[in-house]
Length: 230
Image (cartoon, rainbow, N blue to C red; front, side, top):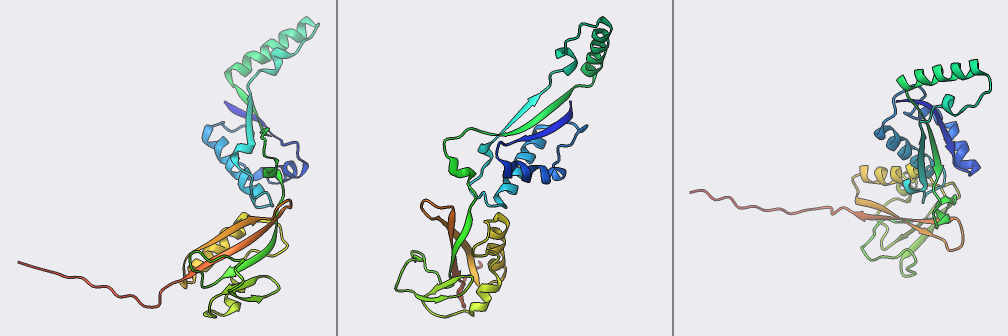
């Protein structure tokens, strides 16, 4: 069964515009075979696309896929007998080469915040994070910069090192790619173990606070082993 048409019917102008603008990147194209994996990959692509444009809570559950395999010629009505014969002949050909019209739509779900566009509010970086530390802890030392706020026990690292590896930008639209890039960039430095970023929604707003937790690697390690032979 070949794909006849692919439609995005999201009933939300911005989502529909994003989907249509990036339609060429879809693996589902007219006159190509339809497959379950293709539909799943397209759903995943759309979710990532929306998450990279502010819709950080958007999931695959928000998308419903419909398929129409009916033959248009059989649903057409004509009083002209010759036209009826032509439609029947056309329908016979379509049976030999079946097609499907695919539609991606929004599911009706109770939580409307999943369709809200979010922006980054404040960014907090804890460069010597100890499990249990809170970014709201007033006992931590604090240094406020234009792009982020550092909260720390001791000044172990240059603040420029933190700034240069932050892809997340205060005041910008949330982008999932920037979120993961920030984690990966800090990890690749080999200074911290398992960097993590917590996201806190600000109540009754579409703003997010980002808390970057960095646990320093131990400078030295000791290891011993015993060998025996008989």
